[in-house]
Image (cartoon, rainbow over all chains, first blue to last red; front, side, top):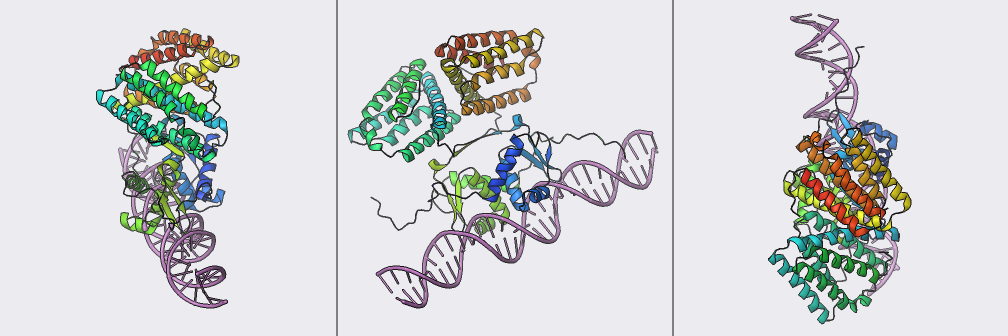
Length: 245
Length: 245
DNA sequence: AAACAGCTACTTGTCAGGCAACTTGGTTAT
DNA sequence: ATAACCAAGTTGCCTGACAAGTAGCTGTTT
């Protein structure tokens, strides 16, 4: 009930931000590299040459090349030039899921999310501490309380899974599943805003959560994995996402 | 003219590239955002203000902010300003493993790699086509041939796993495991260049590969997962990486 | 003839200043 | 009161210039 309507929302940028020159140039250069026209180890044209070739100014070229450097695709040395990096030497992994419109890509994302979450749940079951278990239990109870209040409890749902992932102590698990989960939820929210239908299913979800919790409490990794996988598959089905086992 | 003096290797950049001003500024801004000093949805200072605050020129500020935009942390509108993005709205996931010196981080990476590879192997076993199986078989045979030639067959090893991953048809599995695998191998190569010791173990590795292949051929997902996990755990042990099950 | 030192042209890194496109909020006119 | 208008501010982009560093050429020396 925030009546704060006068604030113009700063971001109507749902989709429509026009790509800057540097954006498009960076894309083109990326293409040139991945297509092999600029081979690994080779020196790429000087900034002035690039500027002339693509009809932009040198600062724009610098910005575009800077992004490639940031992404580990090229590395430059002052006075010498910029060289495209060996693919194996890059230390950065980049994943841009801006354009997932087709269900195919969504399915791939969900697959990866399932792999990460199921593995994390398995690991937590194998190595959890008592403190970890207590935290997870707290989140489980919070979810139950939300249901009793008649709420869908999505935040509590997320928090429960987050607690399990955190218990692995592996930041990569945390960051990746965090990102993927948000992407999937974001997609679902924009695709169909019928979260009301989910409210009735909250207790069903909670039942699956309890199965996961029990497996973790029992230190049974295999059961934990299976419970997590079942939960995720059901979640996918609930959302009418086609996903064949 | 004197015959040219032979190409100086363009990249002695093993470690030592000095960070540019834009690099360091981007890092600082990233900190400001993640630490919450620049809150989500807020407008961050103008480029001129930032330039003055951090003692650099506006182009440098532009370059730094441009990277944040590229990473989905901020979004800007001409005439309005630059706003830090809602964390959930970002469409890009970025992973930079430049500084993994401690074994802790290596273990985390290996854990993630195992999660991805094992899941991919399981999925391939569940859904492979006959063509997929044939390709995998070819790679398996190539590995065997390499062993007979007395070679360690690392390339063939990689190709075998790659074929299994590709059979999932999921590009995220492919890209992620590709990256992680390279990072791990790269680390091992720099840490201890005793690949000679591995040659003798090639046949052992091959035995594990055959187990994986058999499970895929039999369309037995669970067995495939377990075989893959065993293989990866053994690989970790072989390399004397501490990794408790 | 070969090795060394120095020099010059070139390339990236950074800065300064300026104009165009666009947004925003206040002002003026109706 | 409402709508059109305007001006200040901000980002996007450009030109031009200098500093820092590299690589190859040249001439000298051994």
